Image (cartoon, rainbow, N blue to C red; front, side, top):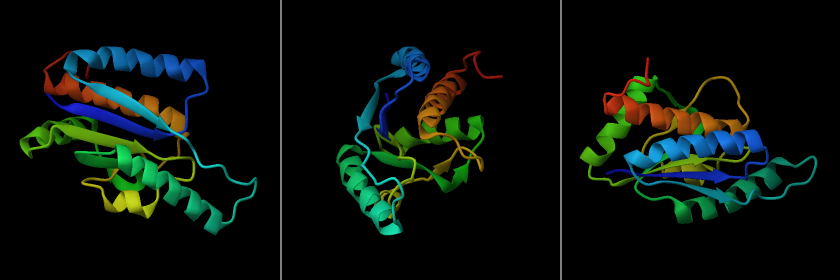
Length: 158
């Protein structure tokens, strides 16, 4: 059984987003252990310099990498876009590669440090469009649930 870790920078503030995440986490329980780890976002000035952003991302990277294990998939704009079926195939092949854990990583609004991206086994992009990282968590959980449904022959995926 595959263990799924969702490692995110920042906390969900809106109740409707927390409720959506909770619903998918509840649905995912039957497929295995799925956990969400919320890490603190680095504080930045109102108009941060590139250096300040880089330092913040590097600080966040240290915390992220302490929690990430197994097959590491950071969510990043330069990652590969996959259909739901292809993501399901990717998830299904992880245990075949000898990994029992997959760690999906969602960065802060400024993204992820190159330190995290360099540890990636696979970089995933949701879209060329930009989404709030809090909404990305809901979207990722839904796609993970959809992947398990596809792999299990469930009726959820159409």
